[in-house]
Image 1: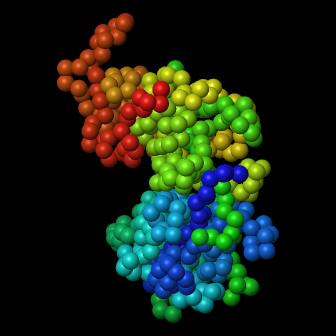
Image 2: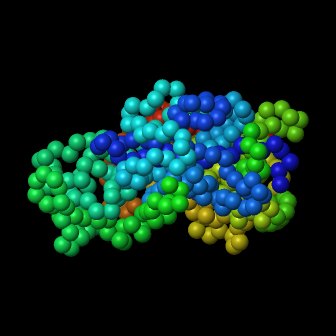
Image 3: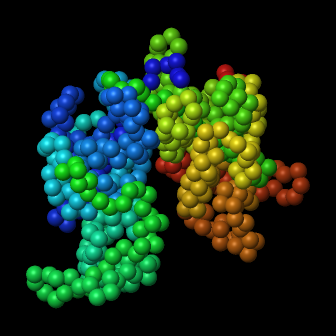
Length: 242
Length: 242
């Protein structure tokens, strides 16, 4: 359609999760040049068609879902477009643009090794490896800012929790994402605020079974809340990818 | 770099201004197929190189600036990336992505006819022409939401004002952008809030010279504020483009 040379079009995904009580990003070692062997965000070219010429990605969100499926082996419960990074200088090979997305997933979803066999790891967002390639460091920083900015007034952090959780676990997720301890003296008012907003609901009769201490009431994201906030596919692991 | 066919990469710009006390968007009649003759947002392909093979756009923001220069004849005082619209279905000619930007400009900057000779017009954002092509209607709606969302707590609406303005003019801009009358009873508290935030400052000794009524103190955006919020080129009309 355009008579001009086109830029290369990529989608990168900043996949955030909670691991060992810390907000972490998923990185994989690059298996090809440039920066072969470096830790990098999962990403890939937009596939207008696949190798056999058959239509593949429907839009950039579809590319992001394919990247998560092929390179991480999951379907993320929350996926949002972040920003398009672009230009002549971000990749020595030529003019590229990357429609960066971010995804939130519960830690348990990433417990198994990645589907590709590539070496993968979770890094605390404040302790990233040196020399991330391209503008991946800027992408991660922007994703963390976006999530923190939205977390104080939305139910976004719920997507980092398993389906059933206790109120202390819920409080902990908000504290980790916002990088802000909630002092014991404010526990009561924090819980009241969350419960008042209707983000979560009690699961009647379901209690946690801790190895130490007393069982606690279990909660879940309220179904209204999920359908309103969730822009992406339902929470599920891709069985066939494992 | 990619062995796959690449999508066409476009930048469209939602140019917002105040005209006759109404938030308006700039549209131009398309001079080519598809949708020849239809009102549409100014936009264009990313030019990795120009027609002579010389490097042209540096990144997508540079493309947006070129579109505004070539198709509107201005440098916008405020330019921000909005969202990337993409997919197989948004244009019958093939898989495209458009990195949509929005720009804010004072009405006076658009008083002269467009540089291209194309028919152009300002439409109130709530009274758009029927059947805008592609997803241009969704782009305009998202830009208006973004500007309204940011306006209530930032100095963003200042970019719609001329360099010098009175407090009633300032108040009017916020009211129009937020689409919410500020009742006379709240005028005082509105002004105090704006002045307290340090967005604007008095211009010592400068008074307006209205044809009717008393002169009023003139204000300007405070210089701190401008340098913090302004992500784009300084306010200037491109002389050579007229």
